[in-house]
Image (cartoon, rainbow, N blue to C red; front, top):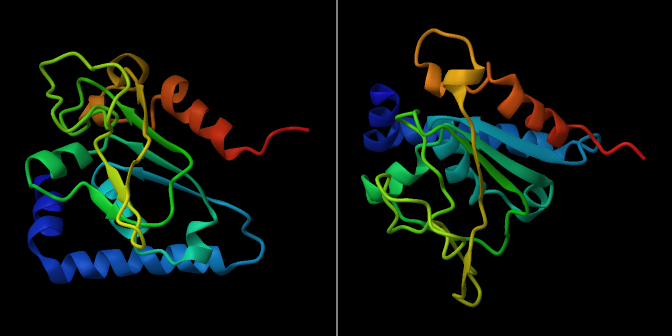
Length: 187
């Protein structure tokens, strides 16, 4: 994790290559007539990359993004520790952002609480969000709504590695909800 984060934060040339690769992949998907909607599913530092790229998508591509799913996301750490901005200039609001996190995962945090929230405090009831969207035409700010879903990877995933960061083995709390999101509703 440290090398991934260090490379993305401190090497602009590498960051631009990564962003260009992801942006190109999303644009290719969005350009296909057989693709009706795109669900971006990102894990760990990939959530930072995906969030970074979302603001660069042109309107035709943004309109196909049906959901953004993050798991084990360090986005809050980027905002609080690295002082990354929390405002996105965008005339597009994400309709669905699900953030899966485990309190034992040292990388992940909830993204719903306001900027002032700290791990050692309880999560406040719904209020101002961590991320803001700024309309580029009016300058008006809007909350970026995130739905945090707390999971227990230690209980529901297999042992090995950094188990609390292993969302893909947590079939009950991560994989099945993701499948429900991906499958079209049955008429």
